[in-house]
Amino acid sequence: MRFIRLVLVVLGFSAFQLATAQSQPESRSEMAQEVNLVKSVHLYPNPATEFVDVQLDHLPAQNISLTVHNIIGNELQVETEVLEEDLIRVKVKDLATGYYLLAIKDEESNFRGTYKFLKR
Image (cartoon, rainbow, N blue to C red):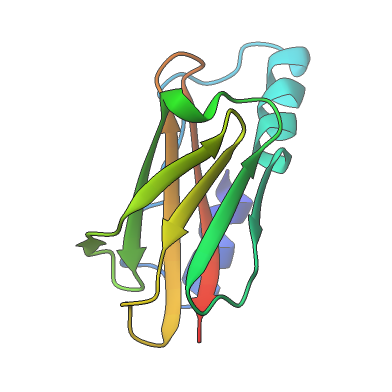
């Protein structure tokens, strides 16, 4: 987690706090499971022009809460649509060109993750 924060500061994202799980993993297997969940979320196309699809390998899309933030951390209103049980579409057509952060939260598994994408 310290590495991720360091990367955000280096890239100029220090104004946005990276969402993290509320409880720290107690064992190596819990930590490995958390890393697998982070890697099981895919955003495409990136860069995006009209929409970003969020593919969730191990999380049910209907339980996910998504928020989009600009580079300084302000939350933006965007339309989202669950296309399949593991796929969510986020409309980014009306956003200005630039980098954005997509925060994903699942209360059931206590998963929290933040992913960067570019809007062209």
